[in-house]
Image (tube, rainbow, N blue to C red):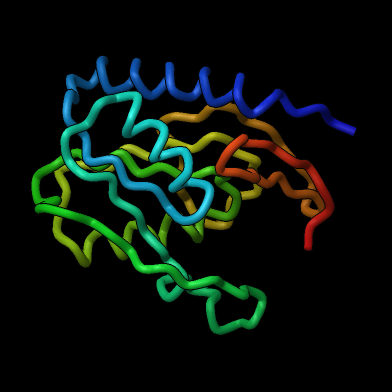
Length: 168
């Protein structure tokens, strides 16, 4: 069975990659937005580490998922929270695990309901492969290819832990 790195070490690598990308792009005040649940945990840590003055944003994309009505999802619906104007701003969209791309697509749909950002930078802790939609992370802590019968899950928020297991 594959060994995953400790989540704390992976987060440090992830944070450094985010800082480097923002520096290289000349972005000093991104709007940090996390996708519930794991992405929100990571975004909260990044928001604090980057010392961003604007409030942290969170998205619950449950009703934006294109597979919500299939019955395969059993979401725990939480409110989304985006303060201020996102028009013309750089949004740092944060999620824990990128798999099919459907969560990110749903998050983009919801973001654009709030306004039109100049750009969106997607940062994920783990890209596990298996995309169904043409979505790619700009920043990634760990890339791996898992067979369809396996998943990787971030548990937390404190401490963060990565788990590898069989698909539900």
